[in-house]
Length: 259
Image (cartoon, rainbow, N blue to C red; front, side, top):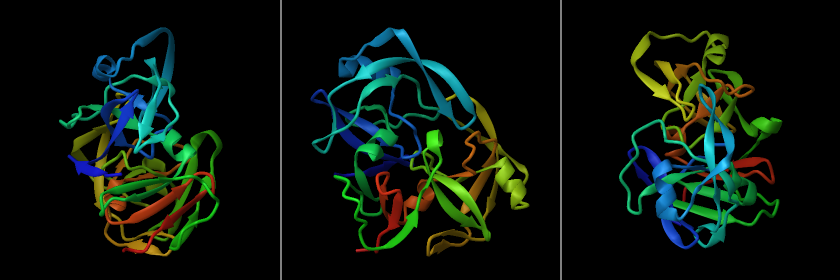
């Protein structure tokens, strides 16, 4: 199915009980998320008896929920159920159909996914335990924190959340201290779904190695991430040049050859 990049976000069109809706594809999110103004369009309602905790890059907060039913992507049914309702921390891109929220980890728990950002395609596959050709990297199971990707940054192994929902790669303050990295505080800031505004310090990394794939000079922003045991968010800036197969079932990521 098509994936288009708009305003730095990877977007897909799904169906909610037969109604088309645009979603942000966010591999770093632990669950799906609905935008408040999407409920009426999708025939959903707030459940007044329940709330949920959403974890952002800077902390957590309680938000209302709605029950998401009939969610499909490219004809494939996706897990729904109780879903948090919250605004995105950045300006919402104008899309047709309108943006309804984000699709997170439940998608990857249900299917193997091949994401080809340069080619603008997402393919969902039934898990088979068989990896396609390419450079395979084992994901580490961090329990409730999900599956983490070992990344060698400037020669030191860190643990990363593969996160297409962040436009730039982010490094936590403790990880930056381990690498002896520092830079002046920038005038720009970041904010997660928790609403906390974070300061940023920008600098290029000498090298970022994932398996046998190495990139030099990748820009990174150091900030007050609360994502332990992970050290960093490997953002869309890295994914934008690669074709990647992700499997939660096999606990593998494969960097696929370019077609």
